[in-house]
Length: 195
Length: 81
Image 1 (tube, each protein chain N blue to C red):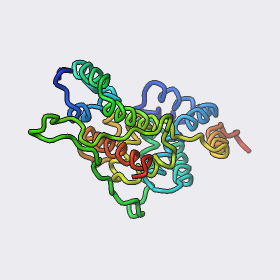
Image 2: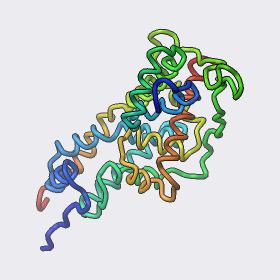
Image 3: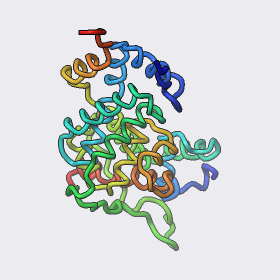
């Protein structure tokens, strides 16, 4: 009988999880799904614009099949995101990109207060924390690539190289991420301030 | 960047870098000193912090049905049968 292939290109915690899964350890399955399901769901929902339970469930099935046959070549979280991305239909309508620059400004050249706030940003009400719906609304107004980069990096904690792997082809991840973070804060501010 | 010559338009471009920990130490010191005497920049920085924190708090727990199904799929199948 042929020996099962190892989980190649995975390391550390993922290598151990992968090995346990291949040995039939059901607690490893629970551990992995508890670890990564929430962020995969959130990613799919942000990218798709509506609930994505079915899509993520199918992605898990494919990932478990890959683990079983030893064909996983990335960290498990990255491999899961690759499956989700493969199932997102680019033809599906997504929210339009309408993110606009912030409205606050600074005093201009020649003014004695040059570079200082002209129209200062209003603070959020004391103790105000963004609600899930407000965050989703704000994200929906970013471009698809901005949304993806922001969630993969700042929510899922992927490295820049891993973001590139999931989003291929994509340009400079750091530049994309900078623009995504700025636009997200502007849009969330609009959501909360009601402007 | 020195704290004495930091303007709000410069500081506002550094807020995100400060929150994600990518600001150089020298700029970080000037940035933090500026926030001490500039309420508008401090308010803007607080917003960014809350916005990024909100992102990290969004994931949800997996449904029990999915957990059960994938655990069953992982369990070794009995031989024969």
